[in-house]
Length: 545
Image 1: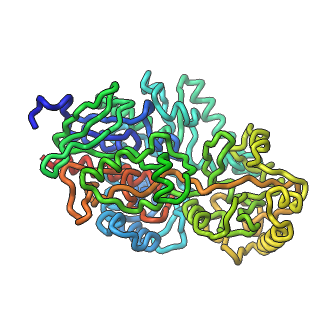
Image 2: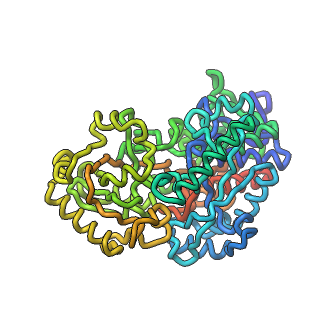
Image 3: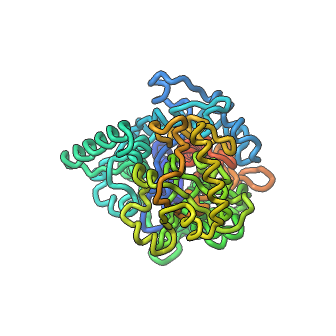
């Protein structure tokens, strides 16, 4: 096809403006290529902007400079043990490419101005497994959004993020700011940090917003154009090779030629109700943005790409408010003086475990009916639940939050047999007294304890339910996004069913089947491979012509 048949010609076309897409764009531009980023929604930043913003980066330079021993080999030993055999999406080659590229990616983005910070206290999610450790997660430092000028107005972080210099280790300590000395000190530091930033004229954003804004600032500095409200409608394939895409812009399809390749990094299908029902059997209670419709995955399949892990997601217990918005639960279900029960009033999981394990347990147990997070008054008084903050009355009116002076009355109000719930609570309270949960081992690992309360002994996760009034809030199997999609190799090339690569087509992030398989090795196991494989995709594309 001659250039006359194209509306726009670039070297690399990147679909998606989350961490995967922006990293691919930065990498391609750094290698002297002409890049175009297209985003399907009016807001840029993707799921990254509304996430915790952490990246699980084993043996990263910050970690090693701090004197914390780690290596790609140790990370791979841990990944092999935790992930196991998850099929070609998590092949040995892809795992090795991830672990061994981490230091290169972190240093590369640092040279372009991304200011990294460690989360030194955050453990791997299975720290007792071979190769497990503490402190592999990193994040972007709080970012001054004034550096983006008018471009910040179209940021998803501005619409849905937290306009404060919040960091990962702030979150778990602030949640217990008024119940522990450590939480109070961290809260005070956070307040002074925020006041100092505003007093100096900065307009800071933290966690996921900081990462997306940091990456976009690099993209803007490189003068790479970004089209908003411009979804990829289809890929253009000639003789089996992806040579471009049709991008809908300003109400019409524009043919964009991509001389070195197309990188699909447009998220998963968390907001596609039809696909969720087909592949997951649930409507989907996702924290991912509305643009997560699977259109890039669908386009990749039409171009010849194979799929994997479509039945899985980055699951986790969630609250769903009166307006239908899902809020992911992390610390709230792990803090003491609370348990999760099914419709029969029985515990069914380690409430303090990794969120994906809790999510799988929610989906996998065979008791029909609603699930509840039940707590006594100390849980509400001591620990912060951001979803309920300032909205308690609305939740009560909607029947999503039930309160009662006794456990018997609470059980009756949520439709659970009072005797059954009393038996469950009595057994749990026994565990709280001994410090050992013989049913689900809650509070056994350093990861469980990370979201515990050190003042509660002998186990920081096992405070008994004894003091009323008691509370029950309905819990749903939510997610941070889907983890199934296009099958890719160690270079982020999209693969066909026969294992051969589709020439000119790359993918990264939640558009792909995850290298992490069906689990979640540590904090930031979604964004980290998105960034790494976005980098690898652009690097391979740059060398392909």
